[in-house]
Length: 159
Image 1 (cartoon, rainbow, N blue to C red):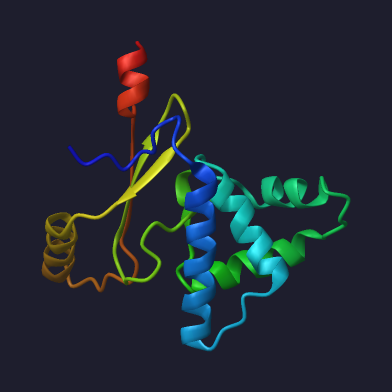
Image 2 (image 1 turned 180 degrees about the vertical axis):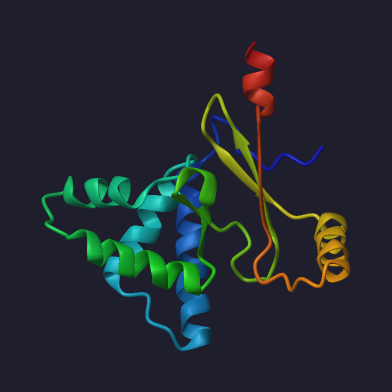
């Protein structure tokens, strides 16, 4: 079974550090700068299994005594989105870290309605079906993002 949702007792610190290291390497390869502020915004998003809104990120940043303004966070989020380091969950107007930042991919999100956690996965078959349907309709797909609501295995088993 493919388990994209993290175990409740997994080493989250190691996965955050790995994501930050990967982000720094990708930015270097692309000639982009992962400034300390952008890195901190990415770190905050990676710390959460649930999507975070821009104001949630701002609140967490300012909890450390900093005084950042909303435009600062929005610019950092725009940079992280542009470089594929995070995704926007449209249904929640919130952001999650990208699990596959090194590879161009269609995003398929499984959103647990009980725990609020989100798992990113990919299905070549679904991507091809969307592309074929769009082509038949004369439509050019620019960014296929799919959001599926349900219950993760742990929440389902807890019932």
